[in-house]
Length: 159
Image 1 (cartoon, rainbow, N blue to C red):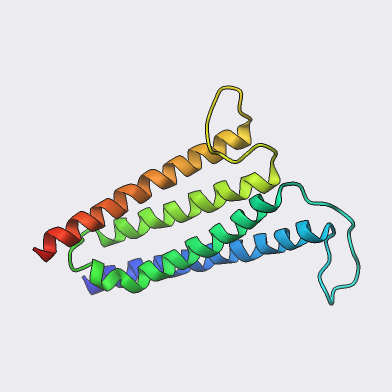
Image 2 (image 1 turned 90 degrees about the vertical axis):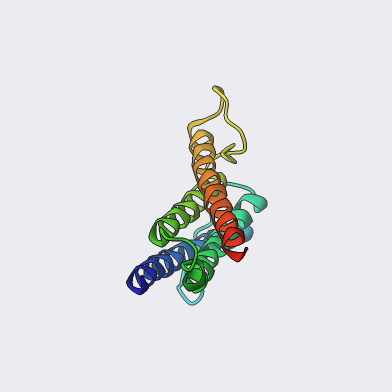
């Protein structure tokens, strides 16, 4: 049991770090978008280029990486307690890793491609919007299943 918890914790911590790094990198994109140029002090040179997207899209993509990465780290810390009432702890960890990546990747599509918010799907929507929509859909469905399972098991165990 302890080995399963540690294996799941390593998975969550590793992917949490990678998702955080994506958030950090997108933060540079956000900075370049705000400045209207690509430049990093003390590296010499400036590329005068306005990145596509909107303020809200860049901010959301940046924050999704940070919040989802931290969510995976928090889950890793809570795993020993959750493992007292959830038997398939590694499956829960894998599910939440999928949630984090689908949401972060979907959020990164919006600032890079026009009309790719992924809030709805229609035959007229572009490919990036459709991809974002289905990535969000997968992530949110898995998140609901995991959170409901944890809540039900936690309250059932507490009785």
